[in-house]
Image 1 (cartoon, helix red, strand yellow):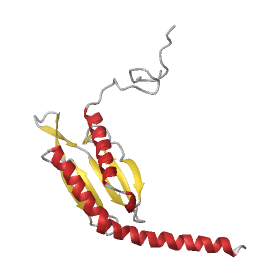
Image 2 (cartoon, one colour):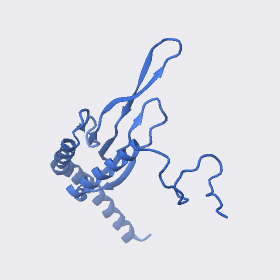
Image 3 (cartoon, one colour):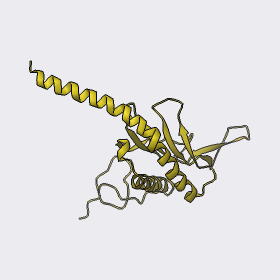
Image 4 (spheres, helix red, strand yellow):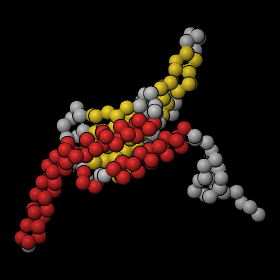
Length: 182
């Protein structure tokens, strides 16, 4: 057994453990305050009454900072059979999430809007995982732009989005081949 290879693996492992401690300190000292400041700027520009920036810190070292656009009435109501009662469907307006991982790195995710009781919500879209020293203001702005594009596309959904076939429609059903143009 070559001890040099084992020694280098031990050194690498100890470095990774030390990075976790340092990343967690950077989250508290630098990243979280920067995220709160920048996301509050975005929040102010959005001017949405239900939106807020939240700190999720109920689990130490798995904390998150979230730009949450809140929940509102979807404008859709379900008529409950033979009761004359209508149930309003609630819309979650989406979130931009900065979540600490177990190793102190930061996962950036988008939760797209969804209407409760109307289809299944999309799973969170993971944008990237960053070390705390990599997460700078321009990244937050880029993430906010991606988030706004995502929620705008969700709100403006229709079947005129180009698909992989290059046609101006999304095919429905089993025949997913583009029409033969002979």
